[in-house]
Amino acid sequence: MKQPLVEVKQLKKYFPIKKGIFNRTVNHVKAVDGIDFTIYKGETLGLVGESGCGKSTTGRTILQLLPPTEGEVLYEGKNLVGMPKRELRKLRKDLQIVFQDPYASLDPRLTVGEVIAEPLEIYNLLPKKEREKRVDELLEVVGLNSYHAKRYAHEFSGGQRQRIGIARALALQPKLIVADEPVSALDVSIQSQVINLLQDLQEQYSLTYLFIAHDLSVVKHISDRVGVMYLGRMVELADKDELYDNPLHPYTKSLLSAVPIPNPLVKRERIVLQGDVPSPANPPSGCTFHPRCSACMDICRTQRPVFQEINGHYVACHLYN
Ligand code: SF4
Image (tube, rainbow, N blue to C red):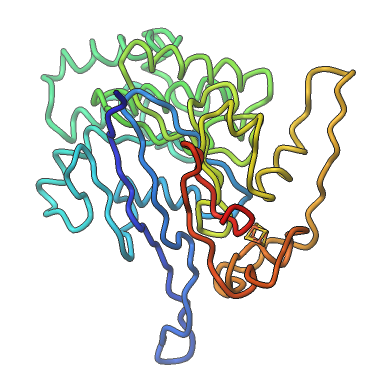
């Protein structure tokens, strides 16, 4: 039976918009607006949506890198939200992140060896000599060499830098890695190498991933289940094959219509969405997708659809009430 590692309950993250000489809060950007989902041990949950839909904020709020506005994040049954700092610090070792831009996330003043050893140093985990040995091991695990430890991040290619970022994330032997668009900044040919590496490491170290990406083609290979976000809300979540073969939500259908099919004989009709993503500071009423939805009904304009389960497939859409 699948065991939950992380349970996200009614998670919200609002950012205040301040104005005027008194810096008053006049509104909020509802980056994450009440989402519920579970990440099971050993799985890869893909999280997909257009830029600005709140997927990266969700990842960072789960890790408590951003304090949530409301809601719960249960990690192995313990609520991380509002947890005393000392207790949270202990659990943080288990929860790591790989960033989209490996160059920006690696301190340019440190050697690669120092970058990877830094988390071990912060947690005072190993004596210096053993730390160096551990760094060498980690470099090899991610397909680099121990002599790379003496070099600086700018001396490496994008793919290699992402491998360094992954080695750093692995240093504390985490259980969950939030991979925040880890391949979006890389060439397509390098993307699959990094995805294969992540898959190998998952098997080797029994890792659980929340893999964030902006399109469905990237997460297809690596994910066990896929969640789709729109304007701060989860609109659909299902097993990967179920989601790709039988998408329910009109938004997921439009995203899938843009995924290329590697068979020239199969043609898929492209669904082009009208208009832009509305502002999360002023989201549309009811179903926030309604201004762009070709299946919109009266109820969609006034009532927020419930994120409900239909035979293990979750969807938030009035078409399935
Ligand atoms: Fe479209 Fe209505 Fe479903 Fe929203 S709830 S996706 S507007 S049909």
